[in-house]
Length: 292
Image 1 (cartoon, helix red, strand yellow):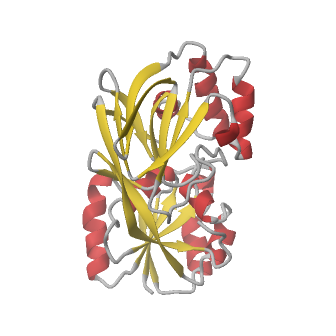
Image 2 (image 1 turned 90 degrees about the horizontal axis):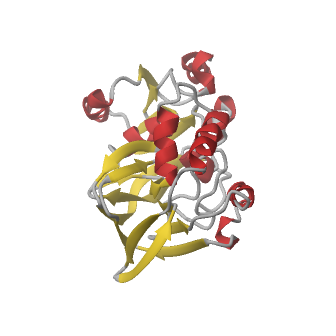
Image 3 (image 1 turned 135 degrees about the horizontal axis):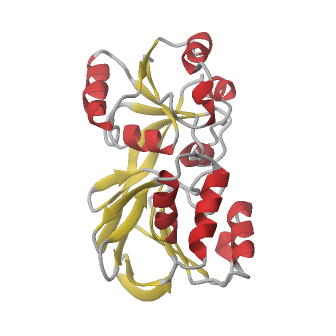
């Protein structure tokens, strides 16, 4: 199948690597390679590629690149491929795609295609996870930090943790309403933010459900334990953490504010309606990938 590689050369630790040469040397199928330009250009680029017989669109970059490409492929016959070169690579890790570029290309060369769920928030698509609260605040600070990587993300979080206040939320899941005070509400299609930080360890992208993780205010003494569980894949067992599942989730807060979609920060209104879109995106996964 003909493949278009959209390369974000500014992404992550691989930005000094000649990914174009690596793709040409490794990918055995018919392909084209283009620099990933502005978001505004992607609609025309993808439409032109599809008209020209391209079947697979590879996002070569980090979570932001994957988000922008993937949301344009939802409910189409085009297939998403991921060559993860970012600092987090959340969806790629969930799907079992190797992070090292050469290993990634080789692992996905058999062109195993799976169809996965996506989701929308107030009509805007996302593929991995969205959230409000402290993680959205950190995503905003991380975007402004100037440098990428896990260390930058952790530093941004530690700077804000002591002064960040829990907010009151009204949460409705498939018609059942609860009110809670929380520092984080994450709505996940896949299991992790990236860097193996698994915000929804039990999530599947093929079960037709969204996993909601609600984290109550935790003392500074308890935060190291929460972080340890986040990276160990056992956050769902932590005290002060509640997990829900549903198809339609509404989050209501006192005012508009920060949110993130697939790690990309933005401002959204006080009422957010998140809905699963079952089996709506075709993706390339490694032949040896576990259950996704």
